[in-house]
Image (cartoon, rainbow, N blue to C red; front, side):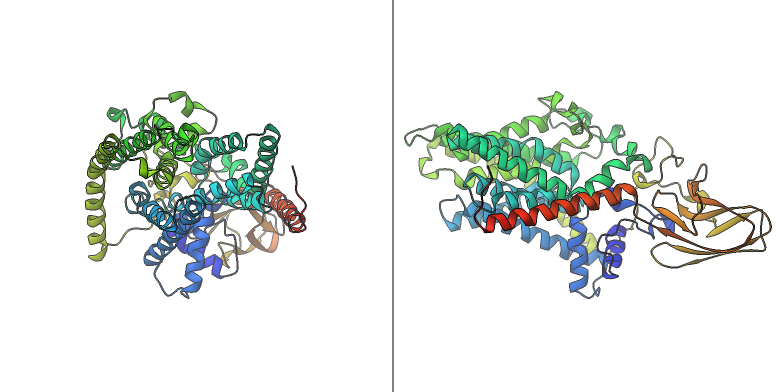
Length: 516
């Protein structure tokens, strides 16, 4: 709530990509959106514009989530329409994708707003790869745009999708092309599209990855968040409460059984498709990802960066996409008594998950309707690096009590004049009149983006990491303001060049010029 409110406020004020949240941490400020992806919050900001900011943030986030849910259905419908046997099947598959249990759990249980938004992009990326395979002129460009949006929506999910479903589908599509020459050209086009997508996302990725040392990034991977604690096949390690993981485990069991059912449907190879078919491929993607979520292949989670996704069941987005795709395009005319029994077993396995999920949603909705107010809060992961914290802190323990009485500006030794006034976005206007050098401490958390005008060296205080500087003798007026850091400018440069390349590629495609 606190992130969405501030992001939308700045967006309506004309700051199209807000990165610094001035009201966070009791107005000490937070660099949240230097590190947290912006796409889902752009959606919410647009909703705030369209509703003239007349809807409270809590209700507006519900509207924004509804928009994202609807968009995920449209994206899944477009993907399935390209290969399902009928428009009705594509519609049913899109509805199933919207109502998929983990999809709804992300919203109602976890409040995982950004991860919830990632459901929109996986079908679009898969559809773009299909277009590239079919030599559509603009296929690589759609791939670049959709893939760029993925890390800018939710980085852990983007990483998991990028090392599982996407390379598997690219390899599978290239295999289906038959000709080695065609496959190599297809791989090159996909690689160029993905690389261009990463370039377009550099506006977010470069600062997010390069500035990790400026915040308490190590707290993202404390023991509670280590992936081995959350494997579905090791319930003894699950941190409490376990209701969320228990629901996910039932969902996973149901999807695994359903994937086996799809493979049984394809066991009769009377049309030459068999294991080479699309339904078989997506059923296997579902099963392999379930093995990863279960912890059967633990070394996978030790790969660079993969170990930092916190929860292995974030991969359930791929599982749900894969099993719904497999079911939607499966040859149901081959259904036998054995396959029917397997699908009934899948429905039975899904029933406990749906029952507990529905009951939990009902409790949460009733609490909301009774007027229970959630408390807006920040996460201590975005406190400045070096800020004192206790080992047993939870993610919402901030430790700001020693700073509550801190004035906006504190000068030592006390000069004749030492005043500060807020301007906008956390900036300060300072008036200092002193006969000797004076140490000035400001009630703003340290971050490399702060700049003083006229320019003086800034430094963080110990131990609470507040912005400070030394004012020389004389009467001076300063302005503390944020400026783009080097990594931010570099991100803008790479994104700008990538966008120019995208336009040039689009112009060439429009003229019928093909690459690879």
